[in-house]
Image 1: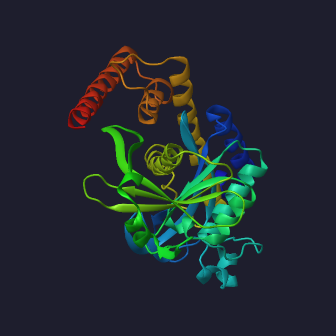
Image 2: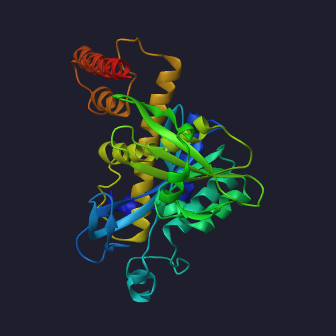
Length: 364
């Protein structure tokens, strides 16, 4: 493995491009959403490439960690990561000796996370990846350079922004959380951001126009938790007019990158690397992306060709990995028994899911 990660002759970026083509080929949708987000891995010491004390959502606090930005391709058929960029802090890029020791190329300079996101989105679009939208959290929504880059390419976006984000309207400039107070009661609609395992994710949603003389439609999308009243804000752009429900569906797709991280780490070892150098890191995460893309593609293909009966939930990436290990990697003799257990799990999960949806419908 060490030879494969460090000394063997192969191009991780070329494999990344192959993964992107494979994922798009399996999950193709012209209305796809490109979802950008970062994830961190807690590390010890100071020699691992890109490591420093910084906030990581993995730990929920500032830790000695390594952070990378990923781009996921999300459609109704499934989702998987198609690109990655390691975030290299200024503490590294301003230390030439440290960069050389970690094998960081001389051409790598400091880039913010939104700049890394723009780079990956540009690569995807230049490669002809079919997508209509970009979604991301406040790190990306609050960056005007990323928003402008998307507008110039006429790619729609639904990007989260902070509550104190300034919004220009025809009545003046307001904080997002101040502007929402000016919305009439009739502006709010109950809509689902997508189906979850425990029912539809219903919220109240409203739109406010943003004053902008440039071509296109600019709006602030507001989400209100129906139980707690907690608010979330999204800055939106589309080249042509789209419905509120469309923007809500795009906003709801942002969670798919979180699921990609969860399954990528839990099933494909995305975070299990013990490498320190630039090349080894890129090779490891690229191979992990490939493994996860395989699971996502098998899942999508299975759903399309063999829709499961109502009493079973569709095959998940977790279940596919479990079956792959039992029937291919470590071939067992009790194949029938393993398949029966798989059906039992899916039947049990289907009953639980149905119960959640019935309870939600009864409370509506």
